[in-house]
Length: 202
Length: 255
Image (cartoon, rainbow over all chains, first blue to last red; front, side, top):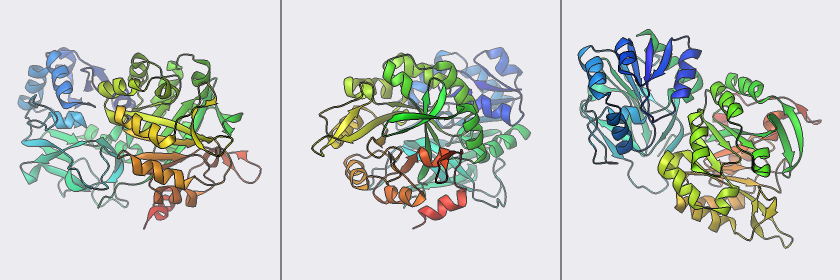
């Protein structure tokens, strides 16, 4: 059973719909018992970093999540803000992040012609060892992005895929059982289904 | 520079729970069931879908949350909904149903501050300022009020600037005079509006083919939307839900 962590932030319905579409058993829950019983977790999220972290802290679930993710090493997939929250922090807010991955979240630089948020479809370049992407895909995998901040990883070995928008940024990271994607697989039809299928099969 | 793709977006109109297509915002013609249309668009891997509920907009009725959640449940691509959004609470319910973007049009004319409220709560990238442009009797471009079905005295460029300043993260620019006419986009207007704001702009109204969409993008749009060409086919405008294959879309935008 995959549990999509419900902390009042993010489009959990779409994630659930697509997981079911790819044949996974999944549910949305904010209950510690469900998170403990799950074999995989998804941390969704959209919107403001500080608000997301505050809401997550208010649920009291952080110790449970850390137990499951950092000690029991259950695979976890952070999506969009969920990925950013797994980093040490963000330029968007003074509230610290979860710090599960040695990475930090930065604002896209102001540049002429660069419209922020980065919103729309973009191709990603997967790393050789990335588990959630196609190796030798016939067609470059493209995903739907909506974000104004992006992740920079301290350790290049954690970069699972990069994307370019003004600068190269981390489209996905992978550090053991910790996975994060900046884009929305649940809104990236064919390619999102492929990625979620791989996460389900881990 | 960037590799962000220009989006090609079917814009679908809802009326009393069914899918319709208008001409010049009038004479709605029934084109089918929305859920069935989404299933077809899913198979064609469309970039994004926009749903506008013209009943909710005109009658002041509540958004049809049940229909919206059935639509969202079938959409494996980004989804924007507009129609009848007057308060933050309504937008919250639509987002909770699984919609990423909320378009506000009439209410953005009546009470632009709503965009600030939505933007603070949902994030700017979820808030779309939708604006309809129509020429008045003297040929002057004016903002059209779709809820009250009348022209305002607002100038499109100034209105859009105000809405983006209020918190909109995207602009959906539609054109009453070109709706359903297959006469091409108003590229001059698209150029002026997109130059006035720093957020992405989606152009709608007038597309007859993919070349028109390329022209809209060349004028400054981040994406191009259309209704007729994605629901009708052939000289007799037979109803046929369709979407170009991905390779032709990419070829279209290759510079």
